[in-house]
Length: 260
Image 1 (cartoon, rainbow, N blue to C red):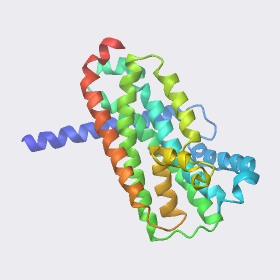
Image 2 (image 1 turned 90 degrees about the horizontal axis):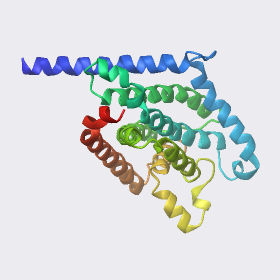
Image 3 (image 1 turned 180 degrees about the vertical axis):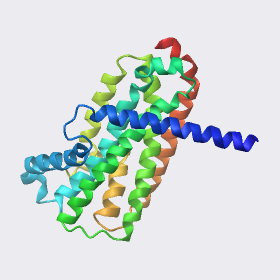
Image 4 (image 1 turned 60 degrees about the vertical axis):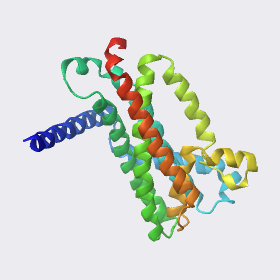
């Protein structure tokens, strides 16, 4: 009976997250003329603009520049969008938390999974670009879904911590927005990190955003096994952030209702 009860509880937990995620997706596209299609078109349009702007600066130095940029863009956007929207999940759902006994973490996870759904839609654009530019995707691409798994683990932990931070510090969203802006320029999105000075290159190599992007590019665009140092960092950043975020959330979640 205990096992059955546990299974039933887990099933209900999953259903709650699924319903919340569905609600977030509907709300996201409620006023959009293109609806879900926009998540497919947006990366392509953004890539076209960036490729045009930086074509004379970087495209001659980087093979398949549009694919190079889009690989970094979709991963950075997954983390940035998921964490930013998750930050306000608890405050936005205050009334629902008062009316239900749902675990508070479900509200955060629903935002994360909504970002993941958008990422999957963006991958349609990504595959189109890989085909157009005739990128020879080999067996090493198996590291790409592995990379995304650890990205999600990192994102969940980060989102847990940020959702608590926002409840206790109103300026958290502005501060985090600034941090993301800085990280965007130090994640190797539109330039080759290898061309930078050794000091800057070393600094960027420890940026978790760049680590995930590097693994994705090596395995997908260049058909090689990602460097062991980056694979180790990928695991450490992901597992470490998940544990920290989980601990912060558990430690503070009982005081959340007092603050919001």
